[in-house]
Image (cartoon, rainbow, N blue to C red):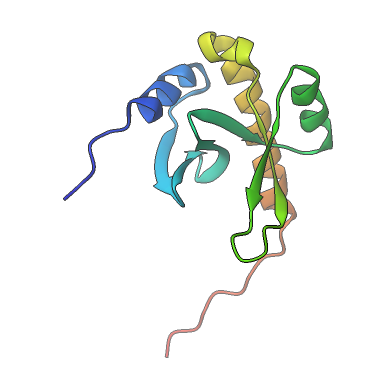
Length: 124
């Protein structure tokens, strides 16, 4: 049976509407936010975390953003996943939220372009 729509996921899609259509997919106890086939944000604990590079991370942290840190269950090791929370001022401003999210999408596109191309699997 399909789970009912998550109100926070619907809110995020509406908040980011100025940047164009996005999709939200549940994954790993949270959700990923996608556009153009790329994940540029993750949702956890009712918080939007944006994919960052050094420049975007610095700007988000200057606005009060906090990193998304995952704790490895087997060791307790804290792992910074490269995502930083959207500033609270953007949570009720679709234009501001979309500007930040568009920067995160640009980071995701740049990182995807930098990955080496993989060879297609041969059919047997």
